[in-house]
Image 1 (cartoon, rainbow, N blue to C red):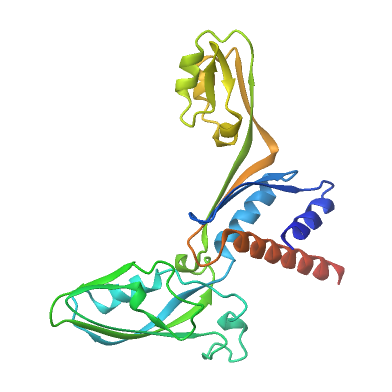
Image 2: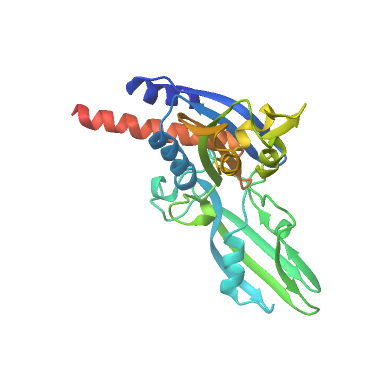
Length: 279
């Protein structure tokens, strides 16, 4: 669905977009891909849609039953809201789209509870969720430290939301850069100086000649440190229709699901524009 959405937009503008996966790091919840045949406007629209529009679950309301810790109720509630929760997007709907009209029901809300006694730290893992698919991503996130005799009891409600409303619903970090293009002409006077100037090791020296490390080429962020050393023999420029795109998830959704959902949302918006214009 993700590729289909991109092709539909691209073909309407007279070009065809392609996606080439460069890196998938499940441990770091990170994906890097090359977006070919695109434009800065489209790449930025994808970035903004990921950050602002992809819905995730987060705690919205907290009812304190007991709190004898050193932290105010409001501070603990704020910390709870920023705990990333694994999200099952098919199991819940946005409150504004629910049949209960935002009053609260099992379709748009999830109940969580917490009971803890000191001494010791209270971790996110102590939040008890009524849905085993929606739990804290990072179980060892500390909420508060209790000393002997202190207690913390609360009830919380988690709902779907969007990053445009509050950062706690943002699914992750998304950014891009132009794909770099480097030309090295023969006759570089000091290959080692050029190689040492690059902060991401794009260059190396072999047989006293400056060569490009192909594995690191896409790490180039166009800082131009190399051209400052030898502007005559090194030419650096960006490719205007190719972008190195990076998505790092906070853990609520996988990076692949984040991009796929964003592409679907973009397609729906485009379809809606076509429908309205057609009227």
